[in-house]
Length: 242
Image (cartoon, rainbow, N blue to C red; front, side, top):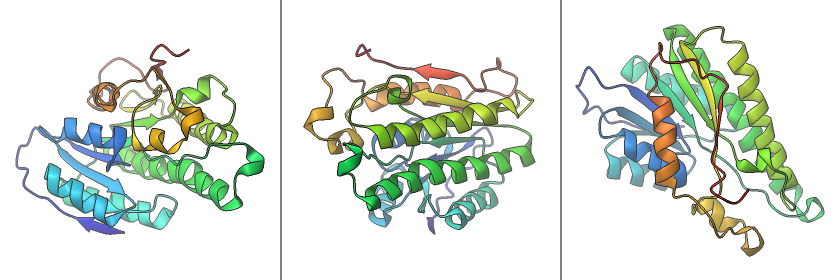
């Protein structure tokens, strides 16, 4: 894990947010909305992409493979050490694995499980560890409409994203406090890099822009500890397709 720092913030009203998968697509859109008034650390697995985003946004960043628990732990520890707290975490990292199961290579299947299952678990584990120490904080997991509606050709992708939804729903129930909120956003199709990789047979005519969905993610991240109880709630954005 390699960190890039930015300590320009001195506004005591600013909060600290970690955007995992924040170098492209929805994650980048979330980071862009937050940097105007808050401290942001973007996490990605490509050093050149992390460098480009941190330079562009003027925020902190960390190069981290989320399938490595040690790298995730170190990334969160460095953000907490630098800023003293982590007010919110957007878990946006995702690995596409589309196609018939018979056609998917074992390597592709394993990587999807590594990122979408292990990575999600490790990120939320460390987010909650920090928030329980603070006694407050918001976690927003980015799922997929595929979880709510089966679709041919995506059995592995849907299964791994379903794991994340099940994990978040269960964790939300055990917080026993509105001070720590664990929430889900299930976006419909968006014109992101992941959507570009899915292949023509999975492309959609109706989609939402990442910036539109990002506004909803940021709204949830900015909820105060005494705001209405929403932990475990899903925000579904079918965007007219279903």
